[in-house]
Image 1 (tube, helix red, strand yellow):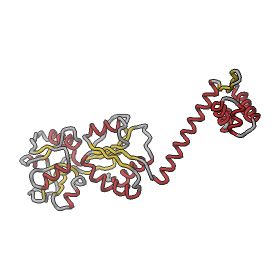
Image 2: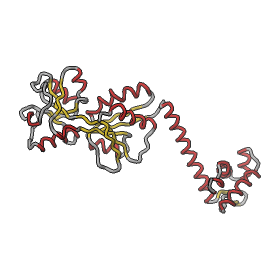
Image 3: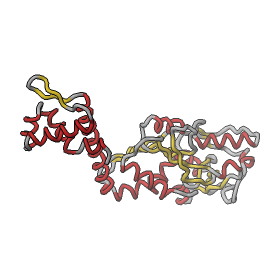
Image 4: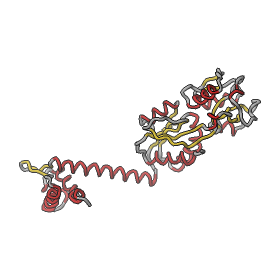
Length: 304
């Protein structure tokens, strides 16, 4: 135990707080139900060991010196931290309350709800979940500005203030109606889609960035028949055999399970590692509920 810890013991700090509160040693002694000599002796011992005055008398009133006030401020901040720590431990023990704010790409929402959120809320129904969607730049902005606790996105930012962890990597697919002539293929090249009606997403979507990169790589420019900003809309269009959409098998899983569409992997190097990341801001301390939810995303959704 060093000199500071020995001098400013828990009891000494409590006495200084009481002197500050009641305006004197005698009043502090009455408030704490101890002898005034006990407080005087303890404070005097601390002053001798620290070689600093902690209290001073102004007329008939005793006040803390600047050093004494610093000691009181230190004690109160330590108490606040202890209270926060105890509250967090209580939340960890039961996760009976709390809130998690999550930003996710629209194509991730279905799998996030099915794979993680359903199990999480069945176990911890008292947790409030705020789920937001947006384009990749919007998602990154939300996590960077602390508008959300966790971001789940296609692709990651190189921003050093963000922590990004890869948790899924699966191929990008062309989504065909089961009636489409290419739906039975094992894979399809982007060149094979030259004469097809296509569904494109907004340019700032991570998926569309990848589609555009593949087209640029093969030296092609395709004009889409549809543009939409919802994956659910894109797969609905594909299910009606109106056009070919682009997304992962997991993003189209409900329509695939219903026997309405098929997901055919795209034969291109860029499409083979369609990566998904869970992102937090570096240095941000997550609440117990958010921290637990982060671990559940990685545990339940990891396909790397």
